[in-house]
Amino acid sequence: MRVDLRKDFEANPLTTNEALGILDMDEGRLTELLDAAYVLRRKYKGNTVGVQLLTNGRSGNCSQDCAYCAQSHESKSDIETYRLVPYEKLSRDGQAVKEKNLARHCIGLSGIRFSDAEIDEFAAHVRNLKKESGTHICCSIGFLSPSQAKALKDAGVNRINHNLNTSRNYYPHICTTHSYAERLANIRMLQGMGFEICSGGIVGLGETKADVADMFLDLREINPQSVPVNFLLPLKGTALEGADTSALTPEYCLKVLCLARLMLPKSDIRCAAGREVYLEGREKDMFKAVDSIFASGYLTAGGLGIDDTITIITDAGFEYRQE
Image (cartoon, rainbow, N blue to C red; front, side, top):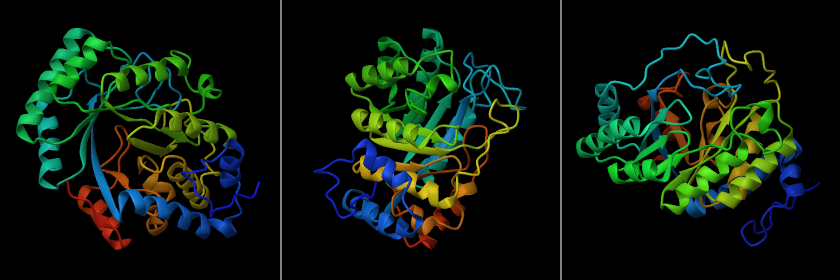
């Protein structure tokens, strides 16, 4: 399907067929597509890029079987494991966020459910972080009960990450220990409690383009404040260690990011894991759709440091957004 890139994407949202048309678009139209995405990106996000710092707050020993994850109980990846990172590490990262004026301190905790005592312990750390640095905090923390979510909200967490990861149809191919419906229900519960939501997915899991389109259609219904788009890093020891990522060309990755912007124009569109691998040297194009990136790694995978990340932004002709 040939998509009219001059249409008003807010007044006339993309259909499923149009979304597929963008992912299938001839690469000769990529500049036109990037320009269309940039119209909305500039309208809502200006010319600035926010940088997030991610701390692995609890590593490994997860009961879930997510095929892409080095922290899964099925994974044989050689990673550091710990129940809760020492507060000193959280504090150092929080200070780095404050000193560099980064957008947000993101903290990920492996696992799907936590005891009330574990949540209380982590909430105490969050309260101390807020006193020390006052930065915005987002947590990726599995399924929460309403009382646990309230404890974190009272401590100072204002945003929670819970990715859809892929389409409803493809989800059983990457995880069997919990369902897509459970993820959606958790997000809706958190939204009802007033949390901002960060929710996105991973491209390159073996899904079809239709699955990518369906994932973004569901994300549009959720309307999260932030949409992280990851491109699969096949980590050694995971079920997807040998995944074929040849389809993740820079051009295809850019089409995915443009689709995210056109479908969720007001959200922060974040190019997350895989950015340094699949889009190196294409930052000027990437930032036409993207207004947010990570610095210094992705839980169990390394990444570009803070200063180098800021340089990437300015060298591409964009502005580093200081919070």
